[in-house]
Amino acid sequence: MSDVRIVTDSTVRFPSSDVLQRLALTIAAFTIRSGSSSFQEAPTTELASFRGLFEEPRNPPAAEAPSVEQFVKIYSRLQQETDKVLSIHASSGIFGTVANARQASQQFLGRCNIQVIDSQSISIGLGMLVQAAAAAAASGESFEELVRIVRGMVPRLYLVMYLDDMDYLQRSALVSRSQAILGNMLGIIPFLTLEEGKLIPMEKVRNRTRAMEKMVEFVSEFSGADHLAILHGADGPQEETRILAERLRVLYPNAPLSIIGYGPAVATLVGLDGLGVVVLETEEEIVG
View (spheres, rainbow, N blue to C red):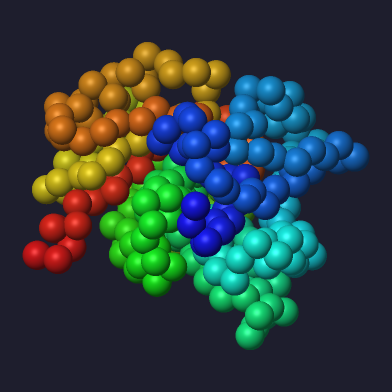
């Protein structure tokens, strides 16, 4: 068994459904709050179970990142087993997880080598990094090699997404309140991407059909993909998701394709009905 311990957070979703059973991982839980209600998220938490919270306009849910104190407890426990911890988390441009983990890690300087890595991604993008690190650790790779593998994958991850309700973007200060009101009145579909770990509105279209076309156009620009994943918020894959999957398989017939529902923490950013694609670009394209 590897002497490296891997920590991630509950926003993570994995390409393989049995990862949590096969690989030794420690999860730092997000707290989802709505009014006086709260619950702790897990990587297996299904958004469908909490749709009611998101449909209450007076108390829209908010995601609270694991605290410094939570990370101190996690690292203290792991320090009893190892002096090497790799902590990989949701993008620092979206959540405060990385900052809290780094602050906590300072308390262990000289006693435990804790490497905190900003995934600059979310959900299954984060999961691709964690799964690769855990698999490498299980195969006996060194701590330094695990860090190198993960850091090398970060710039090869891309995400594009569209959503129906611009109120979520307004709450995240990505658009103004007037833009959100007008956009919802006109039925505008915002099209987003992750750039350097931040959600950036790229453009706006008038319907989801055109939004899907823009998404496929974006993904088609890569000469190769090591892994593709479709992120959806609906209660299970819908016809729209199946159509998108078929089109992606035509573009990259040899790349693994996962279809994953994002969790409540991500839903506080993009709402219940977002649809997105995560691309892990082939390493050759970066090198070449």
